[in-house]
Length: 374
Image (cartoon, rainbow, N blue to C red; front, side, top):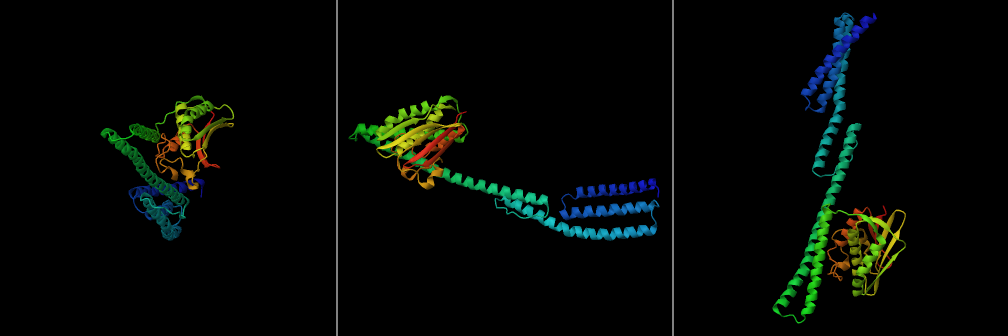
């Protein structure tokens, strides 16, 4: 057989395969919603028909004898039937995997857990892994949302109580003064002032927290002497500390200069300082110290109170958290009492690219505000 004849045979077989392939593609397009097993059978049958068509066309061109053609077609038909049967058996596992993936996808949509399962192909196994990962993320997000909702409800309840308490007191005192029944009007006037200051602090904390939650906390950073800023805050609140029989002390290793929003950082430090004064016993000491390392400056506020409960240390910066000793009205008039101050402090420090942390000291508690130097 000459090379030309071989080329003609190859061309004939390729043409038969191309026509069969186009027919199979059209069939699959029309049956694109059919089960996976139908698609596989169509592909296998198309392959068998492509071979059979090539044999028939080759025989028609007189390249092989009639007896050889019959044998070849018989072999092709027998092999094709077995191939279709085998493909049906093999594709059944893939169909089961595909249906199982569909069920897992519905579980994912319903918020149920999707368990890891080995699949028969790398692609289906990867899809299963993605479903499992997405399920874990969604369940974690749902748990976080439920916890956040519970925390929000508790916070609203606490704030409502903390707002109603001074309002009720103000109303009662105002009625006494209005009716002229107060035997000590000056003392009652002082109480009115204290309750009003507490309300102002609560409302201010709520407003600041709402700005933080809305992402509206904008910093006007400038190069600030952190040492001078902390020293000024200590000097400003020394009289308040003395009024509650608490001594304020300040120390600094060296001058610390950092890019800060002085007003916001002062607010963060004041929240911590007032909290320390609030929880220091009579005759106690609150120490404010500024230290510097290679990359950051740290302001440490330490009191000599009872410290945090061991289980509370991890949540002292959560909005609405209050220690056991803070369940009553605050002793320091400037303390809001709703458990918002340290949450605002953390948000301000983190907005500066720093960190706020707390731990128990011996004695008392210690809060550290760490901000980068650049």
